[in-house]
Length: 181
Image 1: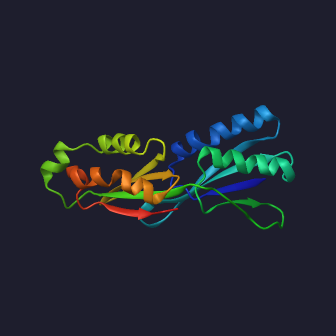
Image 2: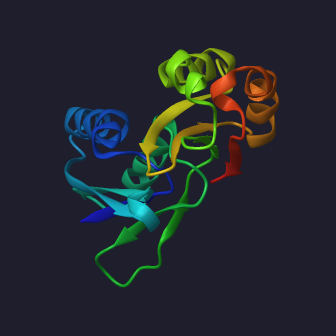
């Protein structure tokens, strides 16, 4: 058993769609193993801190382990992710994407902004603006903020790409931008 602890703030459904299902399909087709489950670690206020994928690999060494690492990175494993082993081996660092969270203020904007703006538009626009450099992986709705989690080749490039939209779309007023990977 190997656990991939992913530095990705993916909700369970997003974790399954992005990592578990495609990885299981790939491992089974290659005859290298399967995915047996997953989990989500929560932080303050119930915000996702990271997620895990439980993997049964037929041979947890050599080229099979390299293949697993490559597969997870192709699926979007961010920097700061690790593979954990049941035996006494040290963890193995994986991941090459950088992460950015945009926290939209859910309490301090005029009521008309919430009535006339749409977080789905923000989600779609972020994906459009990040095309070729990143994408939205997941979201979180907290008591006073909604977060959109994006991962891509460069935090700086992603921030530059969305900054003009952040500065002009009313729902993005007072948004916080944080590097998460």
